[in-house]
Image 1 (tube, one colour):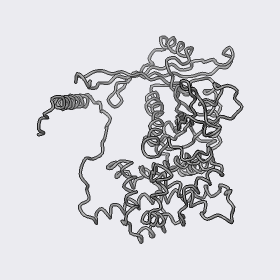
Image 2 (cartoon, one colour):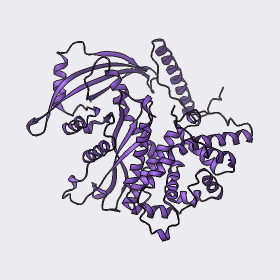
Image 3 (spheres, one colour):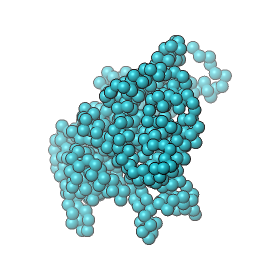
Image 4 (cartoon, one colour):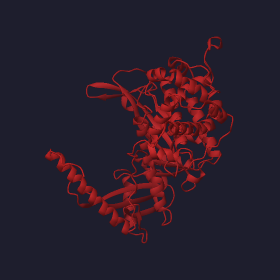
Length: 504
């Protein structure tokens, strides 16, 4: 039993925490009796190290690096072959580092999550780490300076790095690596925009500009597209940069997220012409032209419908709801009680005088659940409401699946962007003040994130990641590579064998 604190305020906080914990435990017990299950919120272990001896720690570090290497060696050969097709603009007589060495070096900076070019220069050149990296990646014959990589990225077509990323995902799809994680027989692709960085000076003519108070701010904005699997895994796919092209006469006619969406959708159709795709979009895209584009490309979609969006559709939905009987559906989902109602075949007109017509389907999900009030410690009932436009008619059989397993998954891309910003990938770091090189580093970051995601969700490492976390696993691998832990003979033997990527 802990000693009472001599500070009255701290003792009161401890007592409040105990009361909330007791109330939550009683609530969870009652929900379990009613057949409801509160989503698990696992935390990392608070125990001491599980290694009892140096030998056990050495064996664990060796095993983790080997299992991580299995995944990387499965993906890298095809990836390096695609990156090798990028035209090298350097003078052949003055080349000191091969293209593959530069790309491996750039990928390792993001796979091992170094925060800047200076840190990568300083730490990747340490003798023990460099020796281990050469052991794991024979392509890294010589270690380039990061300025060499920066100059290289300034001169190549940075978009070809993303083409290599897409090519690797296409190979994984053709090899049916994701077939067990489809929803409605579709590949879910979530699209969302985010700000990458801001400066109070114009460091590139392609930066967007906005007024903040009396000053101007120059910023970089990116529209991201991620592949969302049914098991919750989110994989980087495409990035579309918003750029100032120089032909806009007014500030309000700069590049916008909607303009970038049409460019991104065109590239998505080019890369995956026959793939069954379902787009997950936020309320910005609830418009006739976007819906028409999805119909033209034969894409499924779930688009968030805000209360203030498409008033004619809302009026029609509320009017037809009174006429259609037997539509509502009530069910339990996790710890929530859900009430669905929907209206199919609403005619939506857009364009000049509403001359263009599209049929849309609207679904609304109203939820209630019980929680503990942080102030009163009493059980309170909370509510939420979500609405979507669906490309397919809603029925009792598919409405819950389309809302819970498709519509809600749009939040996954927001979580993925936050992970890239705050969990070690340095999304908001510029890395270079050359626009082309900045994009090149961005694509390498997304590629490094892809490699880490597939490695940590593989059957080799998934259980260990659950114990120490993703960032803990990356730190564990970095610490191993910076010390004399590895058995060189076991690594060389591993490199002679072929491996297969298997996701849990």
